[in-house]
Image 1: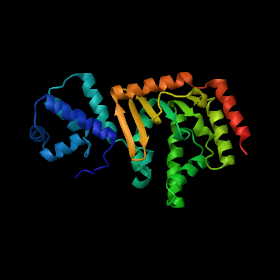
Image 2: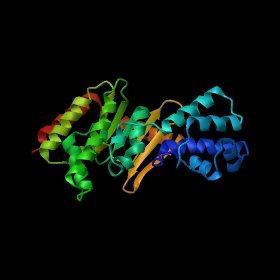
Image 3: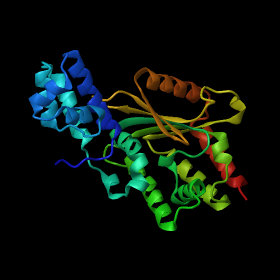
Length: 284
């Protein structure tokens, strides 16, 4: 019996592709099950992302549905492999990394990330003490060990900025987030200095949305948009108190357009360095 894993975004994506392909071929779940030597319930679970399909099953789907386009077949093969991809995040318990698995995987796959944050410094740019202060405020009942594990996950995610093929990370941070003294003045000084340092990296762009800019393109909150190589579409993530909302296609593209509008009115380059240095100097 195969080991099942938590339903992930990538498993749902490949499952949706299989379902669409089967329905276009006018086949039933039983038709596919008979071909794969599986029952209809198992096929349904694969299409729902509950049981990610293996590569041989995806290839059998393609054969049965008469899909012989080489590029399409390669795309679905890649998606099937990714549905079972293991990573460093598997070393963390479900209650620490579980809700972040999709987000972490998107970061691992992305070639470019655009992030707009209204309230806090983006996770990939946080220092350890800043991240710890945020996590303790978020869950005041968490034990020290659990807080440490949450922080470890956040710090490990930041490796994506330094890997052999680092992601290009562009962030617009609202001025209010930088004026919020998270963890106390000393922690905030270190965080601002860290941002000034990161702003000099070739793959990191840090911009600040000043309060004087007034009304802006995303008054309803922050978001992240991920650009990935084939076969994946641009994907947006919006964090909420109730969980993460994931959007694709034209909706993700609309978030990119919002980001471009925010970018046009944000401080950049030398103006960012001066702003951060001035804030750092004013902290008491």
